[in-house]
Length: 439
Ligand code: EPU
Image (tube, rainbow, N blue to C red; front, side, top):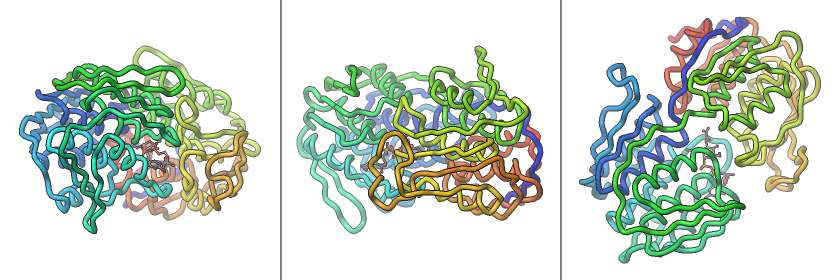
């Protein structure tokens, strides 16, 4: 349990490393190679450990990864002895991660089969895998749903295909990429997600020998090749973590320099940060985020796929918006259930009302379907400490920010969930002058 004495502005420097939403996928991509791959800037987070465990379970050799003796976070994956693993073992190793579904393409190419357990991930919506399974079928794989999980297999080499996604899903776009690169012939993906992490994955696959073109209007074309080699790559920095610390600076009236933050990937966030009234300076090594003093501005915001305002930035920003003067409106269009975390903020004194209606400019998929996916935040609200149980990764970090912004003492339980995506966050909080103790 974490005990937080709030009310002190966070001030200082934190460093962000490779993106949580790229690094595990880059590790999976190494399975496609005939030689070892080297990934740098790997953060020490639990999602990396989960994928390391899954790779080892399949016979790959993985170096120990980021620690004191390896400051550049270099990870070497040697896939030359890959073999099948049992679904029960995969289940035990995967924990709550959704990454196992992305092993399918590489394992189908190498072994002709893959087993997938029931998948987890943060509880922020239903998070189905129907698009993934449809994609794998369209490459020619057979999908058998068993009580123990899902068995996916093929007797022949997978064939290139045409895929039209009903929604630009990040994971499904990665599924298509990781499967199409070694399939026979051409694959055309329309309605693709184009997040910076996907572009970085494409860069990795190109280094391995893949032929991928990203065309206008969310069209990606992949020419399958017979064989891929290894790669040497430095993972792009984590823009979700960068946005989280930036929102923490606003919420606590502080000033945080995020070393490693990359402006081009943060453009949409930075525009919103400026509209709220936050100040920032960009230099070669990172971005300084600062509360300007005085009142913050309320605003109307809609989350969306890239290049829109990403859903993972939404929760920490809502905490900052509790401190803005006036009414802010947030329409969450990526996940149907990402406002559950506001209940605890309400107990801390925030004034937030959630709605089933689309309160944004564009009606979204969740409009007529009974999901509380819009929120109105009224501020500034005086927050006070309370007892919190972490609900999910970003929601948990947001609760922590709220506890740091609040007057008095809070307790936070379940901080292991935050370790999934935030490297050394206790050390970072201490470096920023937060009054937190772990017991
Ligand atoms: N969807 C389906 N069917 C599918 C797949 C997705 O209906 O088969 C729906 C989802 O339910 C959701 C929407 O499509 O409503 C978008 O989901 P997407 O597939 O894009 O998400 P993901 O790949 O599962 C990744 C990140 C998330 C991030 C989203 C959106 C990883 C490991 N996870 O999830 O990160 O929110 O993209 O950018 O990369 C986080 O970091 O806190 C996090 C949840």
